[in-house]
Length: 210
Image (cartoon, rainbow, N blue to C red; front, top):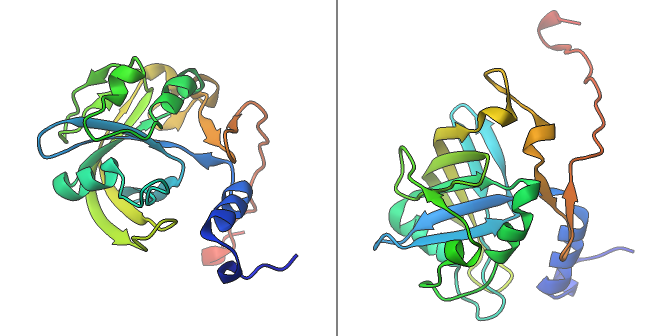
């Protein structure tokens, strides 16, 4: 099958892309509005950008229900700050609960029976139950399209990291068996990291090294 994207509705392209580009990590984003009200929402269009400076991105889409921008995007535009909370297997149900589409004054944290803790470098709090948090300042927001099916890229510089001792191996390695991160598949499907394949990458040929 050969597909020209412009020949299909964006809903169909979404299904093809999200059914092929997977598993995707989940960025569970806490943000606040200008009045300090907290919003918590998961984004599976999320990833790391680079480590120097430490940078991440997530992509809030335009709501398909009413064509409006999501509260998270409105908040990070207004305040320039957010926190990424990593989703472990134990938090899957709570994360799913916070994916509810609701008015800005809806409290996703209470709805999902979660607890908030203060951050160190930003105003948005972090989810206490999450094992790893990345506090972020907005570096750049790139708007791709403001129509249904469109979205934006929010790029954030990591200013502080919280990590529970149980998920760490030494100073800078993560214990996957303890972290048990969850990946997003398509539709309502998610994946565990229980079937791991380890493979050494080839030796570098750069700089005369073999």
